[in-house]
Length: 418
Image (cartoon, rainbow, N blue to C red; front, top):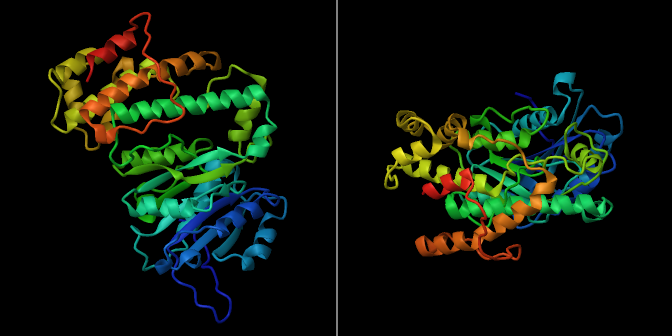
């Protein structure tokens, strides 16, 4: 475990114990880090009984820098209401990537808590050095944790000035993907609602906004130090451990749309690739055809009911037949210790649930139309069966009726399931 130094208070100043630590990995961010820290200093709505921002520590890990990132952060430290700790590190090649830097930064931030801290009440967060937190970002994260979440995925929005400089076709494609991901997420709340993550919510996992309890961080063994996708891997690890994850729309961060990034495989790399290959596959591999998503969600709901001892009529036999696996295998999978372990095993065992391919940009509009057409019927069914779980109507929904010219295999299976 990385051992960070304790933040020192000015002479004669007594600081409250740290209740929240924020990790900020930074590589050559001399130009952008000040805006990040200024945004963190303007957080409000915090619990004054816990010391407000005086009980918050920000840990900046200046890794592999060739500029004045660390020196600048140290010069700025006295102006901030939180406790700022700056460390410099030269990561070796195997760890000199986004996941390695964030892991080291989060370990360093976690080490700032005192020995008497209650790990269930201590909050560990991470954001990006080129991000800017909404004024209520920290309060929204802490409130979600206080209400029972073990981890909180914050929402992101692109920097409007930088986004305006991107090619119009790229902006349109990014907007379509975001809208489609949101539609699939709303469909998920209608078919297989999660009491720990109710609507409204979002479907983004970004390193720009991660929050979890210190206890949860320790239970999953820290952030997976992957070169790419460490943010999503962390939330998947929380779910596998049976912990509760909240996708909080109020925990909002403005992120950069620059084309020259600092992390290999990050957003900048993705944007550049899409500019040269307009039909590149969407970044998020959860973007599958709408009917495939419908089948997946209904199977997930059926598995959840089976594990709870509340199978629909005909299950487990009906579900096993629809998925083409032996009943005994399905029953054994359903008996695994955690739901997410069962679900991952079922997706691996059942051919209809294996993701066949990722959508191409040219296919996205048709899938958007199809998902939009599904929503009225799904909302109507949920309103009848469980009106308290019905997501509110949103401006992004265009209505319409479902149009299926042919009954595809995916649709046939989806119709057979609960």
